[in-house]
Amino acid sequence: MENQTPVKKSGANPQLVVILVLAVLLVIFTLQNQEKVTLKVFFWTIREIPVALMLVITILFGYLIPYLLLIPKIWKLKSELTKTRKEKEELEESREKPVRERPVRDPEGVPFDDEEDEQEVDLARKNIAGRLFKE
Image (cartoon, rainbow, N blue to C red; front, side):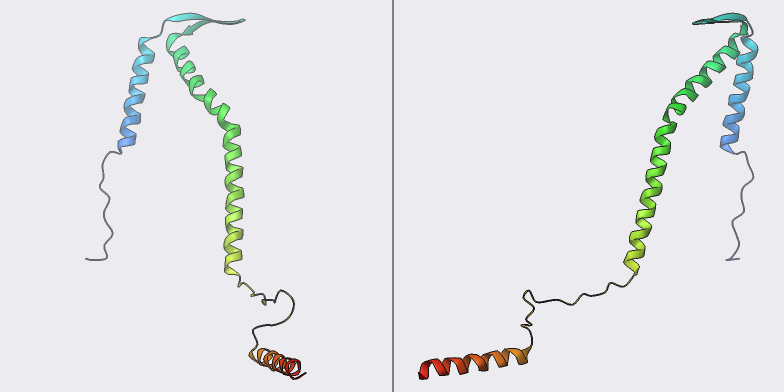
């Protein structure tokens, strides 16, 4: 009983119901507005077009024109997104590669951190100091 998958409830999909209601309203609107009109747009004249068809075409143009004007911006944003994804992948790949540690070089090429060299330098200073004070 524990590993059973949940059973989908059979019923009406809310989106489908909304689409069907809108379709019925569109049919009613179309049947009620069958009067023919003449449409003049600048130099063109469209004669005997139903009012409902004219309104539906106008609504479609009102929806499509802004979308068509945004297509270049959509392309630009998609290319930027692709470029950013590539950069992200390159950064992740470089992060996965082990970083080689570079040896730390002394500024003048003389190693100062070796204890043996420090002891030799101290002995040399003592010898020089001893010679200077003896003379």
